[in-house]
Image 1 (cartoon, rainbow, N blue to C red):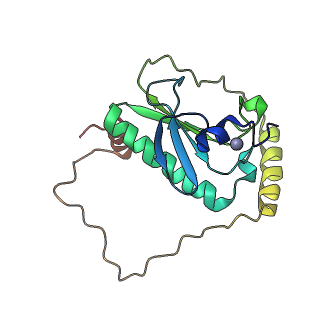
Image 2 (cartoon, rainbow, N blue to C red):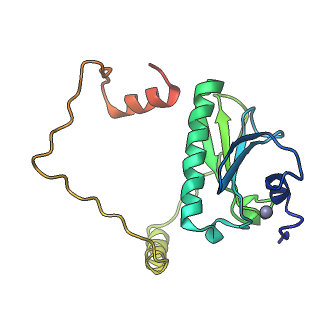
Image 3 (spheres, rainbow, N blue to C red):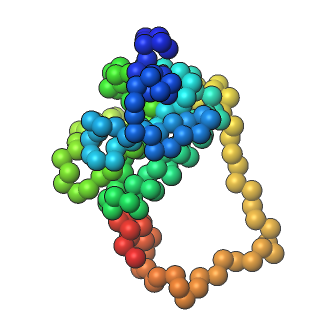
Length: 183
Ligand SMILES: [Zn+2]
């Protein structure tokens, strides 16, 4: 693994390498990738050096994904794209080339030639249920804070659909319109 001193992203964070910074706070930095998949491709990184996602503290990770989401929204608004991919290359077999965790935010247009497709693999029922059991057990051991939805009190006013809400036939249609930013 690359050390902090020779880490490309640490050098960008430390201003030893010039970059196009689109957002910065105490924990997170986001820069434009000049060799990105599409114009506007950003990478969002923690300012501390963590090689892989497992090492990133929860609060840092939370902030980082919130920033990635805001950048995605800004990309939609300013670059008039039809979608974004927000993804992580975690580990060398997953395509990670720099040993400093980051999240990619990639603007997408239809037929833009960016390929993130894979061939689906058909698993047997036994394979799926074996993996399910193993994962369930291991996830319990990670100390994840399970969030339970609390029921709203009965007296809470129901949400009122106003006339300004566009009449949309079903949820899928609404989803597609949101995604494509169709008014
Ligand atoms: Zn680094």
